[in-house]
Image 1 (cartoon, one colour):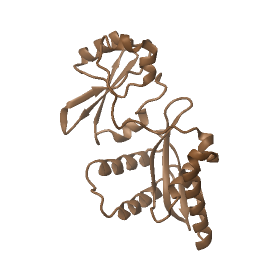
Image 2 (spheres, one colour):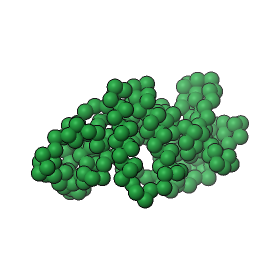
Image 3 (spheres, rainbow, N blue to C red):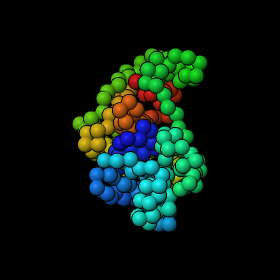
Image 4 (cartoon, rainbow, N blue to C red):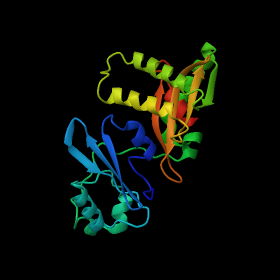
Length: 239
């Protein structure tokens, strides 16, 4: 994709399909258009920025494509698109508003690996607490790379995590997330995922699954860890 950063990636769109939203795909020459529709409310439907195969999409062309397809809006439009074309030009064709709930953290890989600096002090302290607990109890901790050969062990970890959430409502988003994780693990290599699993005394106790967003950015799509081990999430982040 030409989009530098985004709320979505191809792999995450595939594993979340028919869960919260239903994804549609259409080719227009060499260009790819993706849409999402809420199965519970079909009136909630929108397009994502097209993936250009041979050309660019200035705001006027983007609006025309939406009208031709019968859509009224685009969502998850990155700031870089507005910066490229200018807010004045974009607002000639669209009403622009911020999407609440879509802000997220972006870390440099080397910062998570080193955890240096005041901003990451809490993560650093949680990891130290986890490592001290491991030493005190004689727990053997191993970090292994995920693959299709061992991904099934993550399902065991997911079920343990679920059992620890005593008051959780296992409908809606949590049920969807469980389905999406299982899809990701079932086609781990095919979707070009990467990941790690943490074993404590040989048993899976946490895992993280990541995918590539663009040339220099990855997305942590799923991360689960037993809450019996404080600091395990932060330990996974660092690894």
